[in-house]
Length: 147
Image 1 (cartoon, one colour):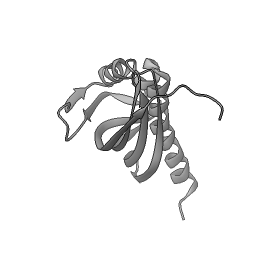
Image 2 (cartoon, one colour):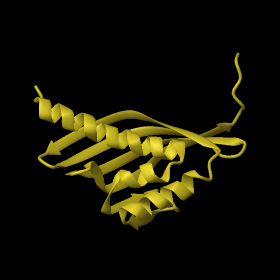
Image 3 (cartoon, rainbow, N blue to C red):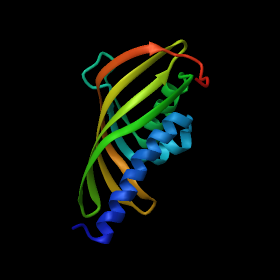
Image 4 (tube, rainbow, N blue to C red):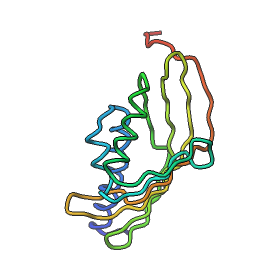
């Protein structure tokens, strides 16, 4: 059975990952930057032609903000998450579904995030992220209405 500190750390790490998705979906630059350590490194779109590496928490947050600002709207949902905590460091493996409205289209992606996090005085922060799209489909984006 996990002890209280371990359970608290698990909750705070999950909150960091959820805060990241909230920052993307709400297009909030400050929230995005707050998820990363100042010297973080992120590798995005692994296995695709858009593959890139970004270094620095502020730069990562700014690039994600610029990217998500192009969307009409988005919703990211965690499908499942595993955590391994060792003292002040953690490894998180998150599968998520991203629903993105982009003009009249809605790409839907299955994503994998492999994160290394560390405990800081401000809370848990992502030090290293690997973002890998696993699959994608598209649908027409329709305006919301009651059925």
